[in-house]
Image (cartoon, rainbow, N blue to C red; front, side, top):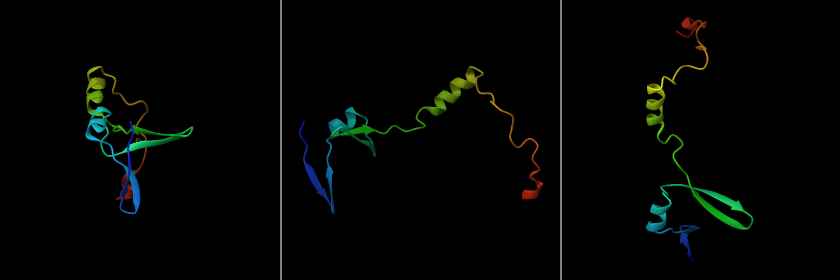
Length: 81
């Protein structure tokens, strides 16, 4: 596929059509990878995507216990008041 580089203000850019954006789930940003004479665009997924669902699964499986004791257990927080 051939695409044109277009002028955007004082810069230049690449316009991606709606079909490509939808097919590759591209929203607002892409990761730009420069590799061996190539430019690769990779969609950036939301880093916390589906976390709420996963937390519910963990809770249902009783897999949501703390891995270490509370770090403030022996702290005297009165000095912060």
